[in-house]
Image (cartoon, rainbow, N blue to C red; front, side, top):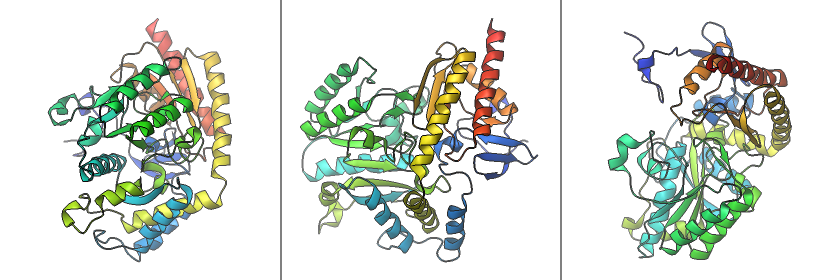
Length: 419
């Protein structure tokens, strides 16, 4: 019998190799047999400053000797208080409350429950959530409900709730999105949830800051709660601390995870404006916010988040991201001159483009490309026929150059096979 481990987003029936990683440093992973692998997707978009960052690992080790875990319902601890205070300093001023959870999906679930709880407390029948086509917000039930319907979740359709959908704001067709959003908001909607500026799992689809700004304006006009899912886009990925900053938008609810701990440990927060907290504030225990998990605000994870916040306060992180953005753009331009790629695009530290014809997430191109990348020592995971590069900010230029060389070689080889 092979390993008993059941891996996520993996079809074990294809018997594709699953390398074992032994250790990591910076932007590099090392396998148990000594191979050097360049982590070109920040290990599923989580690693920001690099693997095993010394300030973060030191904080984790020290905290593990002091307090490893304690119930957070009705109790507290210093690392959580420090994280909350640190977030209040750098996040939008209107977001006064910090609710802890343990993953991006659960931060979205919390946001949806907060929004519904707000309208319930006001005794207003607002239940419909507005979502954008091609979006992805996680794999728990509520998060799947507000994401794109398709191969990801069609098996679980009986569990999902109805939502109102608006079209993606393609360049030149943004008004279609605005009109659809205006109609949905006017129909007593509860909230709009969006991935600001770029839809990750939907294919790294990028839209303008002006469109995000207008969507926020429409929601505000109708009193509809605006939820920004910055689980992927936050912590510098789009070139600013939050993607919302580029549109001058302060959301009503903000979801953060992934880079919150620098990618070292699972932790998430949902930040909210004061009226959402006040809607649940009462002498009536039945009106409390009913959500938790066993590891809410785990002290060790919070210590990692404190170290990450210190890095953002004390080191020139955004300057480094700006440098990485410029290098990414240069390498992408070189690739476009030598390989048949389509629709190349960049946003902050993210680059993306298509190869061949669009066939959706289950395109046969993806596993073939992924295997070629793996054999050449690069961790990339195409979204169907969309290839994207999103490395840790610390990546050395020779490693970044190697990523694009490997991508170019794989595309050229695939093109010859398809001729």
